[in-house]
Amino acid sequence: MAAAAAMAEQEGARNGARNRGGVQRVEGKLRASVEKGEYYEAHQMYRTLFFRYMSQSKHAEARELMCSGALLFFSHGQQNSAADLSMLVLESLEKAEVEVADELLENLAKLFSLMDPNSPERVAFVSRALKWSSGGSGRLGHPRLHQLLALTLWREQNYCESRYHFLHSADGEGCANMLVEYSTSRGFRSEVDMFVAQAVLQFLCLKNKSSASVVFTTYTQKHPSIEDGPPFVQPLLNFIWFLLLALDGGKLTVFTVLCEQYQPSLRRDPMYNEYLDRIGQLFFGVPPKQTSSYGGLLGNLLSSLMGSSEQEGEDSQDDSSPIELD
Picture 1 (cartoon, rainbow, N blue to C red):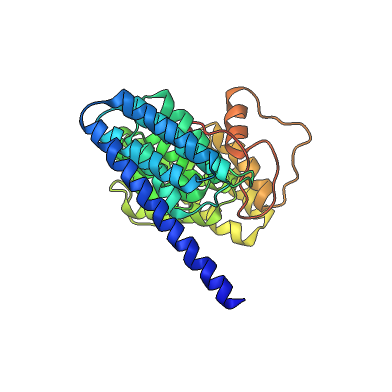
Picture 2: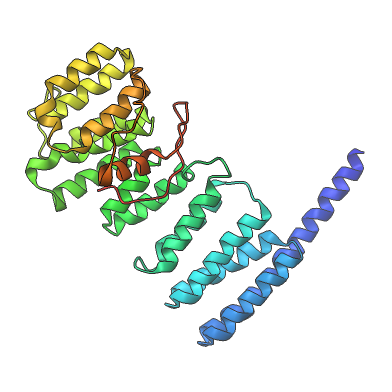
């Protein structure tokens, strides 16, 4: 039995090596076509080979060829061809039912980073990539992929969308550093506390207490306009600090008094109390309201952030579509 298994493993390794060698030879010919500027012909050949490999269940070979082809087209400024092959990379992952792995997520994030930020293909690509990365779990996408997307968008100074993806990652420190840059470059000095308050409250609505704490600590330590604390000069920062402390105790009376005492600060943004209603339910045993009081734009924003279905557990995330959270 052991000998037979060893022979099968050796045969598989030989076949794999032959397949890789074949892919490399094909890649060499295609690369030469692209280098000559024969973009259309090369693009069509890539597509033909993709469907041939897929029909033979050579999913890995198809994926590797499309990925290298997309990178090649990107390097020659052929955005449309590159985006098309990038979508075929996703198709190979979906049809092969490949398990999510860091290397695959990094490859997808690389392709995303090279796409024209204003292209509709990029929107379609990221939506499909996040859906695949969720692995059928009903989540909003793999946290690692969200983190990689957030970092790319941060480099592009697309702070709003970067912020959304950081919220669905586990990278509270990265989120805080991005928010410091966002605040100092685009915000008013009087709003330095509001940048982090919103992020903390939204992390808590997503049941991510750990990242909420990290983003608050990192932001308040690194922001040049925030003096050492706690306590802080800004009342809103003190409220967030007390709220994070109160989470561990879970005492409703403490939460209620805290919200009452800081109403002047909480009225600076009409969403704060909406978020706090949700946080009260998640962490302090406040019963859900029989009829939702959320309406209009605020209700749409809150339901999009939290998702339509209720799920229990510290690590669970709700199923909703990506939105820009202002």
